[in-house]
Length: 554
Image 1: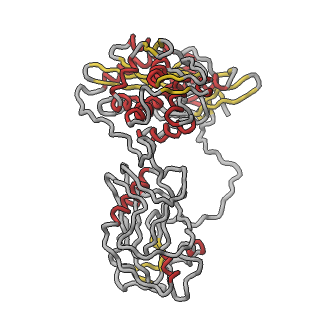
Image 2: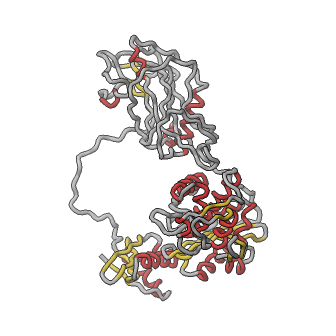
Image 3: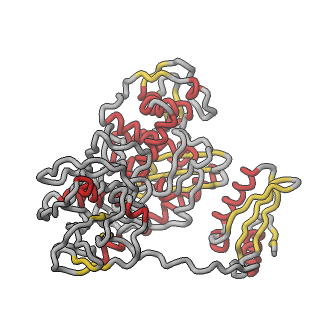
């Protein structure tokens, strides 16, 4: 990646989710720098080491349970020596526990644009679901350089004082061997292989690259040198520098903890219904939630939250539509509260007496959006007849807005009453369903009344066709051949051999699936899902590189 512009110059399997190992500590350090910058903690804060942190396996600083040590020394140990105990202690000091810190790591990853990364701990030791990609780690390396230049020099140090003792860099060989190299982070576990995110600057160009799954330190460093050489050769001499924008969190109780947009009912108002189309790449700045909002642990997607916020903001300036008064108080509850819940489908709300109408709609969510793309529709009560007309100011969402809307989103309002006799017509095409009536009240409409559903979104799916049972069908397209690398003593060893081989012979094995099977005598490592011709060619090329293999057929 050209660090100046963020342009990817070369990529192979860049979005394959793999074990990041100690590259994870780049995120741990990023959050530590962020916490220092926002006053959550300081470099001189004395951190008390927990039993959990002290028990982490090597590489480690040698921390003891109950020991107090300044945060600056923990940062040096994690960045330079890649100490697992120091990284865990940093996470616990900032978030209170490893679990909470992992949640913060994942929120930060989303804010930075790391779309295929999920963290489970602060140090990168192998754990189910703890995965990342070469692209995401390169993005993180660039962020460290631009977002915290005052701390970036840590990654170029060959050694440092970590309080308890002097520690040496795990990346010192590459730093010494490659001209212009000044970081960033190594990683190794048996499951991951030898990983490295490196950065170098030559002649005004800065290149950042990431390698996963090297077979050794020497092989990994040699491959990294090739990648950086390729990057310097392809990068233009002059390019406009595009610094990354600050991380975009939905909101924050702490500087880096995005607020959740929770299932929150809007104030009942029979005069106006807001229908919002999801906006592309809207970057919200802050959010205000009502005190009685239900709790939810799931973040609403940035696009959807931004769209709803933009729609609410615009609705405040939309012209008022006079409300048609209904004879009974319970009819006023027809404009039931709209809520964004975990499911994109409308959720029935309990009946409650509506408060007196206010001069304007009070927003449930207020978010500053950069480029909202929404349509606001004001819907007035329809006439009690089979065919009703809508007011002229009802507008349909444009095709582009529909395309941006989440696939299953339906924001709907149901009313019944009277309607002016002008404007486009809405016709009730199907009988009213019981679950639809729940959005109004507990009673079906009186005879002669019509229920109209105002909705924006994709067309409903056609009715399911009768199921056709097929006894046997092949969807492999002839891809039922494979390549076997033999048996190994453990599943980790087999998986590692597959990964190394895939990187070695990417031309023929890029589309293959890696499969480890536990058989008598060991764990068999196979590439499957190939045609006979491709499997034969791949095995021949591997044999030429002194890698044992055999072609396996159906």
